[in-house]
Image (cartoon, rainbow, N blue to C red; front, side, top):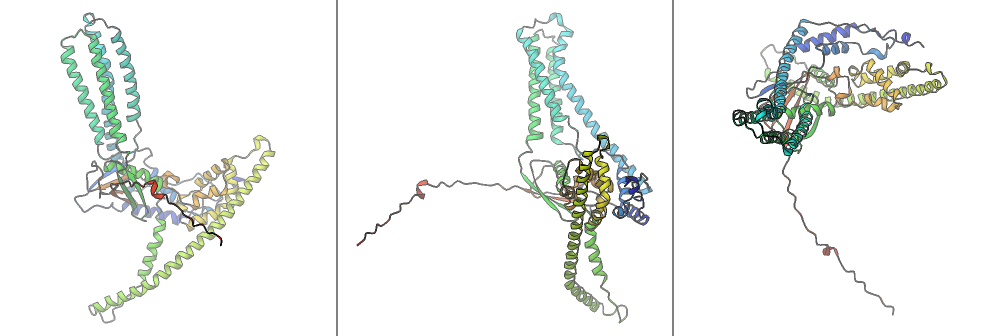
Length: 522
């Protein structure tokens, strides 16, 4: 069967679903962000580095606007796509551009200051040694063996300091924090004051007087390098080692579905704790699926829509009686609603198990067909062997309908495009994986990082906290991380102090004597 002719109808998408999704997307962007009425709360923004194009999210929304019937009409793969943009989208993009430019300027300014200060630190000991040789070389005392040995000491210490600085500070930033990192700023100020003090002493006592003791000048440069090494050790303690010991337990709850996780953190500021929470969120939490919440909302709306009250006595009469009638009707409705919920969930579980069984059988048959093809390929010439991508396209139609129905039943169809499924299938074929390994991604919803980046990545998070975000964690602190669709509520609890006591057990206390009375025959 020709692959291109097999997939000749994939471009038939539902125009109504496109319009409905675009309208819903525009309405969602039109809705204003939630504002805090409390003046005591402070809202700051955490934004990741802009590694994606500005229209990346719009493109993902356009892809989501496609119809999910790729299992029923899986016949063609076309390169045609449509992109539409509204005035609201243009305004939003321009606002994001202004915010990103401001954050980029702040980040590059900090990097520039740190780079200039680091260059000054490494050039200062070399300048201390070279300036006397340039300015009053003829008046200097000869450098002996000890002085020449100090040159080697300075060289190796500067090399060690350079490697340690590169390992500790020259890292690609993972996110932009809203406020200055206090310990890093403190270290920069300390280094600046330290180098400035050394230069001031060097200018007054050595340059002005033209000191002829060159060995003492070199020793002065060595003392500067030694002090810089100690400052680097202090930086390791403050930036890396201090936060390693767990001191707090944080509970992270997603506001929409109540999914929660617990993490142990050390001495961190609120903004750095928020970064750690977000890193663990993308790894541990299942992907946010708003379709699962729509079912419960529609069920509640359906139950409330069944209540109607008629005023037969005319307007303004018997208002209390109407209230009592409505309360009684709602109570009777509530008594029977749990039965409806029970049978709805049971029916849903039955349909999921049925679709899962069909999907498992279809995938096992497709992988059996792959094994037959691999056996046939061994008998063919090397140039006629089938590529894993071609093999995936060959067996995909046999499982597409069962997979599409299962994803619809479990409301996962908008997270798995046809292209991503084909790539995953080709990956499984390349690595000789089993049908169970292929289905694991779809049967067991994994963490957020498992899915395509365009479908879950939130470029901007907003940190809302009553405390200053530069303050450290303490018992009882609550802060919120908000994105467009949901928020994460973080509650901090201090790990309690544990007191252990020792109880000595005398080994002799376990000994006992067994005395047997001998019986004598008469």
